[in-house]
Length: 448
Image (cartoon, rainbow, N blue to C red; front, side, top):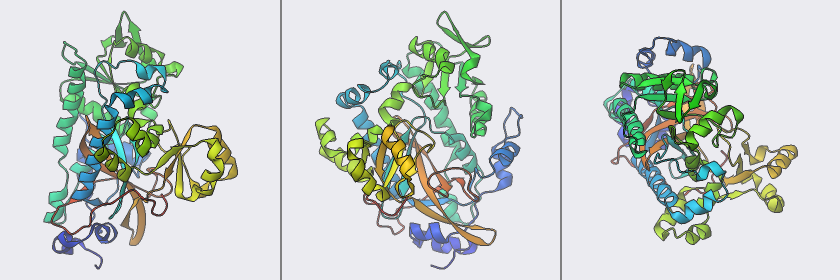
């Protein structure tokens, strides 16, 4: 297929394979004026568009990423299957036995908002590479969806419905409150992170605050040091806090700065979501070793059909054991090494880039080795030049159901939001009547 212009898009889109669309469709769908409007906040300060332009200019990609409806269904199937396994008493007992003590504390009914299942997706394969329990960027990706300008009718039909997702977010937080058996109405939500104004995704936090305010909640953005606990009541200044939207990366609340928040959680003085138990059950990367091991799954009583889905969809993962150092080093070119409790791709290494010094650090640390699954690729047109970027697809999940999809375009080993032309991208799902062979298994294919 020749390079697809916006004029030709309507004629050719339905008949294109996904790889062709991701490599040869150069329709610019991001409308900057519409984006500025989508980022408008009733708070007015700061101007989010200006803040993003100044602080994180590579936060939004101009081009969409294309996947098939089969890809979407396979990812949702894997999400549902993981959720069903985590619900098994044998799984929970096995995972929580080695987790921090706070992970065994009863969270009081809350499930955890914004689980993020990150997939590498190509024409013929997909693989779940990571699960997160405080996946950021949802409100930013919704704003991006509001700012899409379709160049043809088929693209218009693919643009996700942002308003529906906003309603789902509000319902999700209300659901967490209800599951926690609180009799009073939910009044105050505190969005808590370490030095929130300094966080790269601070604009995302501001959009959440705006969303909560628009729906009648008191919404506070706070550092944990700004909270106080007296007589079983958590406060921010004089304001009683009902629910914490937890964006901290201290997943077990072990740091001294989070002592008040930890105690409030242990006393059930506040509903916290997501919480330490959710991270232990889902996001610790050691769990991927269990979920991709057929023998362990059988021992936990996982049905054969569920095992088949997990083994096909999760790349083989194992804990890094120094007794297997020689084998792992010899196989390193096909492996990606990640810290078990890491986040944001920190201290994660592609095997073929390892030095002996870093290898010794990995052996001394708590790491997993994951079979590499190639990411998808998206060719973009940047200042009359073509550039090939990698992408992953994030599934935002609640109660085992996928709520929203967002792609992240990047260069290098991992997502970084530092790539010219990269950043969050809308996911356009091709309808079933377009030709595709569908994804197969998460076998190694190239490098991450």
